[in-house]
Length: 281
Image (cartoon, rainbow, N blue to C red):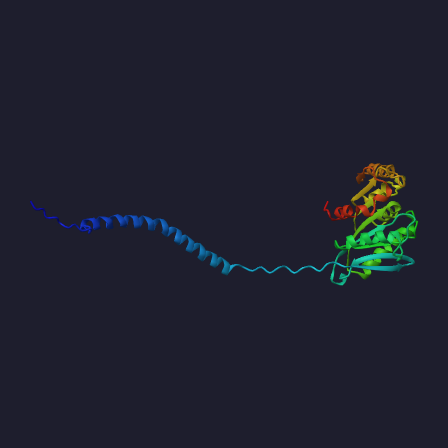
């Protein structure tokens, strides 16, 4: 018996092909939905970055301020040498407040670079001028102990500065050691335009203050720095002064420096005095 073998081929039927087409279309659609948002987002972000970059505002840097240089002047004022420190560009400045420093005993204002007082004045001058002040100190007749000559020396120094430089009427006073006497005595006689007073381990005579004198300085803020181990000008001298002034309704701020003697309450307190002067009450 003979069998006829039919040759089979690997060709798919039309129905099979159609099935594959219908299967591919949904898969392609799903894949497109997944990929398209990412592509669109990347293109959008890229475009936004280009726009932001192209429209970014360029802000110029502010001009840098030139550093302040200190000009030092030694001026004889009615027979008393005075030291004045001021901004070298003072001619372009206006309303510079004045700081007057009264020195301690055994010192005198001199142009000798080896003089300790001058070294101290340079430190003060450099610090205050760079903060916008005119700094000055008169010889005040040397060891004056607050006498009338020293008071007038201070007045003449202020008048000289106001006549020759573009200063304001504002006066700040600093007194160290013996310098506390001419500082307070000047304030009692010429209280006008004095903004604040800073006293550093000051000599003071509490009993010299009566109702009339206290009334003259009542509205002037005063702050004292004094070490409680001071053997040159006793700390008790300051506490007695404060008690005396308080009896006449004048308050004084005291900063007690614990364990410190006399000679560490001067240039060491420059920053404190500056902060005090610049703080609005």
